[in-house]
Length: 303
Image 1: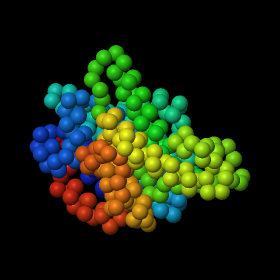
Image 2 (image 1 turned 180 degrees about the horizontal axis):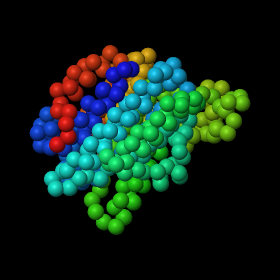
Image 3 (image 1 turned 90 degrees about the vertical axis):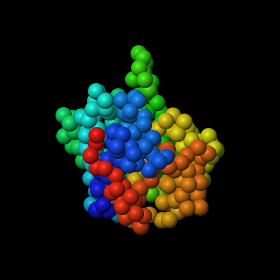
Image 4 (image 1 turned 60 degrees about the horizontal axis):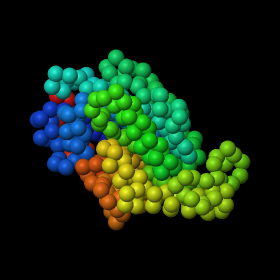
């Protein structure tokens, strides 16, 4: 876990580099290269951060390395915003959202919480990132709800920025999770106030035994079927960076995150249009050393 912040710094250096030399250093057909090409044309970037706030983080991330990782990502975005592309500095905006059983803040509130990222605003954003150190008591880890809301929020912000003309902004999603798609049955006092039905799982009643597992199965299909949610994010032009936080993550959970991000992970597949050009998956497990080694070959300064 101590390498999460280093990993994010390398990721940002790769993903948000803008010069021709930097682009040449990036692997052909990679997610960083896709985002670089977009920025060279658009000069605008909106980034939604999805931060896992589930109770399992008390065990999987007791040192709050996810906070260090988020701060490193914000620092990379601020460097990008202060780096001219051609003769103009890009406009960068970020939205910080948490998720467990639902998005926090709610989408209705979050739509007005976009913040511009610059060197001048970085200190306040780093402070805001610190809130996630204590947000680790959530029930469930509902990927489908979180990603559905993220798609909506990115689309709404892009629409607002183009309402009076201008080009479409580049869009990115940075998704932190300790790995397991999990929904508990909504039975007992701990489930008070939570909905017993989910829009992506019609006919599933969460207040019945086994309802949570059935919802996860429905959500997995909703995310990964052809033309499902993950393909939808790709068709919207959202470049995804998924950070698997836990070294305790099962191989199955890790493979699912990789598949949902890049189209394939181990024996699993997801969607019909995903590839390493549409997303990059990084984890805290055995493959992290390889990932860091690969990214370490990239230039670490924005141009």
